[in-house]
Image 1: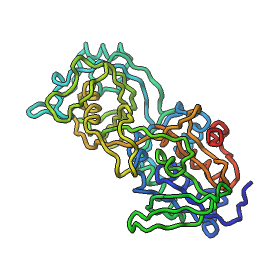
Image 2: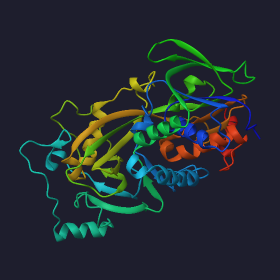
Image 3: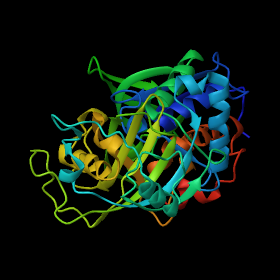
Image 4: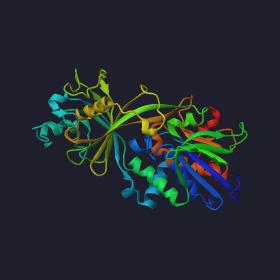
Length: 418
């Protein structure tokens, strides 16, 4: 067991969900003493500037990996109850399902650039008996009434409010950072250039460049948690973490939509796509597309599309390049099956990078690296928000208890792949 009385200089690298939950749970560990334990969180650009601020925020007991999902799902509920998460970061229980649909041509659907075409009326979405019959036959829940009846082909439920929930990722991540700061964590905006490990004997210090002053600083470190998401390899080259770009949009629907997260499979008609806009994608559309659509509180819908590796990982989250044509594709896809989204207002077009593990195991990698005092918590793919609390709690246990106490995570040991 690690000594709980010794002084520690803990440095967390990365201000995404994993770094922020690690900071939070370190300050909530029974052994934490702000007089003996100094915690510094280093973030190159801004807290939640990457995927942790632009993800969907879906939580599910059916997610993966199964050895940390139950713990993290429970911690999400506890955090929301303790800190008013329903109001502070949009925590709520929801339904989740898989929907197969036949997309409509945008011209017939009346869409223009994701907004209501000039001179046209917002659909009243009144369903006649024939339309209702199609919905019933497809198995669509009665309150999932924001998909065009003529488009829906089938539906099955993946999760209900007992097994599925959501948060707003940006508000959740920044709240974790604020709550950690309240307990003594020092948050510094600066890009890490090196970690001194004394030739592998153990961490000694971390060097970074201050974002505002551009000055270089070196701070002592007894323990370092590398949780830089897709940027992890740049901070710690042995880490087998790669990056994949993902685009998403948010839409204010033309009327409130019910609390569902929907994984779609949409069959597109021939020659699908807007022909009258410079945002038209220059790549051919697949016959079938699979955007995900999450209804959020306050009349907002989040939709994301497929990933790509076309643009290399930039220096920081502030340098991420958003492909407006790919965002338009997402808007077009969801508009082809929903009048409420088609006639809504597109409020955000954005991109981020997701961290993947380049190894036989799917990841994430959580735990010791083999270098004394150097821990890794990265490679959470699209489930970083879901698994952030469990990862943060486990990091606190590694540092103060010497081992993982709350979950059996031998399969996630970084030493197996480094």
